[in-house]
Amino acid sequence: MARGPSLRILLNLALDSLLALAALPAAIWAAAPGAWPPPLWWVGALPGAVLALALAGAPLRLPQQYWRFVGPRDLMAVAGAAVGAAIVFALGLHLLGAWRPPNDAFVLIHAATLGLLLAGGRVASLLQAARHAGDASPDAQNVLLVGAAEGTDLFLRALSRDRRAPYRVTGILSLRARQAGRRMQGHAILGTVEEIETVLDTLRAEGRLPAVIVLASSLSGPVLESLLDAADRHGVPVRRAPAPTTLAPAGSGEGRRVELRPVSIEDLLDRPQVALDREGMARLVQGRRVLVTGAGGTIGGELARQVAALGPASLTLLDHGEYVLYEIDLELREKHPEVVRRAVLADVRDEARIRRLFEEIRPELVFHAAALKHVPMVENDPLEGLLTNALGTRIVADAARAVGTTAMVFISTDKAVNPTSVMGASKRLAEMYCQAFDREARLGKDGMRCITVRFGNVLGSTGSVVPLFRRQLERGGPLTVTHPDMRRYFMTVREAVGLVLQASVVGTTDPADGPPELAEGGIFVLDMGEPVKIVDLARRMIRLAGLRPDEDVEIRFTGLRPGEKLFEELFHGQEPPRPTAFPGLLVATPRTADAALVGRAIDEIATAARGGTPRVALQQLGRLVPEFEHAPEGTVATR
Image (cartoon, rainbow, N blue to C red; front, side):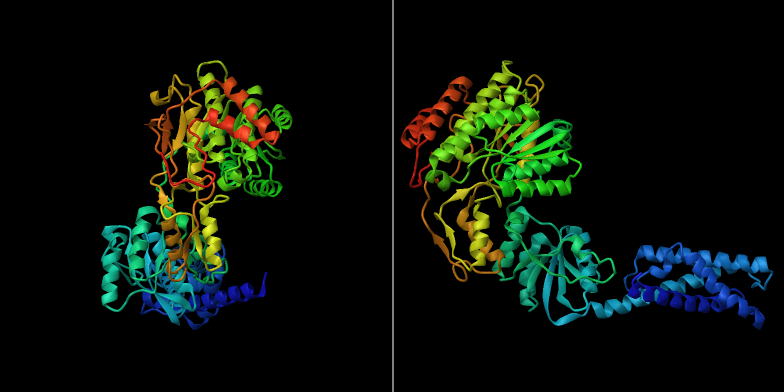
């Protein structure tokens, strides 16, 4: 045992022994004021009282208690030790036939007296420590605390343990109206989070405007948006409290330094969690052989994480990138060591390799997320995009169907709707092939279902604008936006993948048993909410960094890039959207074609691409996807 803890335990034993010595005469006086034991009685009784407490306190770990951080459980242990010590001491007197106070209630009085002294010493130590540990440093910032009771209480306790607290709480905003007007650890609850504007106006008028607003609970979406707007109008930055595990006291009992962290853009754009059919997802995945292509990417990696948590019989991770594949494989090895897992380096365009792999693994469920997704990069190398996105999808789908896969889930994009880029058109062609497969399965010609899921941008994904803005902010700007009116749909990756799994459950349901709106099949489209202006996103990220847009950090417009549109769409004009009974999921009415016809056309495009004739490949692509209006210089026009 380390020297420090040993000395502390010995000190606790000594202090508890002194309190036991003091408790005995006090209890005798309280039990029988007119009676007093003979002098020689004390010679054996005082050591006996100390020994009784040691025997009763050891099982309850009384000597190991940290007095400065005593809590309700510690005080319960104190009460148990006091009662136990009083009983042991009384039994000793009875067995030895020694003098006893003439009061049948002596055991209870002794226990109460000893318990009060033991608890009192600990509470006094706690109060003394709190009085000094909670002292704010001379340059401490005044903060307004926002959050639910539990998170607020935890933050205040952590702050009180900080020996030189960097923050001084001047008030609290709760999440519930009924808490307004009350106090928490001596701090007034000034109102609710919806009243932030009024509260800040009042504090400004009183000269008590906080230097920082601290979020002690999880706030997101419109509530967080309105709070940030109000704070911005008053020039007050908003920060998040540390995670609860960071706020909790360390194992030694010492308080940790309370350090605030920025509010992330993911918090701001996040939406209330949609209720998902977790049982249905478990039934879909549990005990099955699952393969994920593009497992090293943002969507593929999150698919692998959520699938691994559902207990597949085996999980195969397939990617063309060595390092990203290594990373996701290592992560899953650490988090889900029980899952039988295999990492495979392979290119979805290598038909012979993919067929051999599928014949060996024989996956029952395939998630196809492998793709080239960056619009300008595919515009620079359009043939690569066609080979990966269109031919690669056909190769994976054919291989899956050949080995009897139950279902393949294809990850598509909103850029496949009225595409102006090769990336979007190639994904639309892949959609057509998958939809043709699914139509055949629904008509009973083949058993493999092919579920297509279409959605927009995910926050933080590879090539996303959010990581780009973060890097530009770290360099001091400017933040580059292609056009003032550019809008995009956004969703967090966790939410998007959760809905992909939900769509997979719904899409694999027997048409006879499923909802009527899905009888004809269709493309699942995630409800992305309202599109976000990219320039507004840039301004918000600058403000979240504590800076001022156009003053501290410039926003520079660079013009549309090749293949880009101002506004992305989720539905084609001939795909009227249909709601489903599942929150967050819509269905686009399918535009079907013959699988063999689409497959031959993909092969022709692949032949032209491999032959290095982009003009021929793009002409064939335009015939297959008539709504494809290529805009190699970008376009501001949308349908």
